[in-house]
Length: 379
Image (cartoon, rainbow, N blue to C red):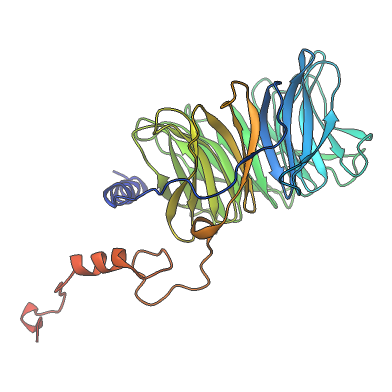
């Protein structure tokens, strides 16, 4: 067994054997962003702006809401044209989406400060879909050359995007995500999906790095800072794994959550990871605090909650508890969202507090001794 696979096995056994407890959902006030009988799907969030696709009059349109006032969000239409506009993504005042302009999909955007000025990011022959955005860079998957590739464009000047092919490889490269200058994607060049990354600060000199390439599929990556998360079926069902890519050529991957059920569609912002999880028989939203090492339940309302997105302490998702997909949101607070200012002495399990868990670790090694010779132990 290769060294990284052995490390993954040890980390996984430790996580499973640790008996990680999950509290009930926090005392948070969930709210429906825009109550309606029309289907709403695929939310994204930045600051207090939530965007989603909504089915109106026979096709999908892009809607948004300012949720500064949690009790009465301000809802607005972003793109409501003929045919479909889907898969929105938002950063600051910029919203991008995929738009079906016959006969194929293209990527379009708008500045919410000038909502009538729709601009084209990329609309060529064949399809451009699944956009993501960070600051003035938009990434997407594109099948111009007959398989899916990842492209990026600098949209600083909206009517003159500067474009680059990020993945000039065979096979399919899909579902890109971006943080600052780092792009991640799932890559099927080896037959199963792996996770790759590259820094696009210099469009002319791209260096690609493998984040994880174990057997089975690693898919749906997301990134924040130097942490990449993804859904991984290495153990036979979907689990959530992550990697520290501080050194891109030497990623350190670790398990976030492993259940006998499926955990998928992760998102991350800062030190909080969220995902959808069906361990209780339907899809719920869970979270994980990288700082404290604690997993927590965000919502377990009946029916299904899927496709979560997070920014700061706000989480949004699509939810069918009323019989129709609607967008819900919650503001995290309390110990689940706690940050660690510094690790206290005696914190053996890395959760930023000294408690019985640390005592149990210490007690399990009571009287261990590695002195040489052994006869000096106990002296």
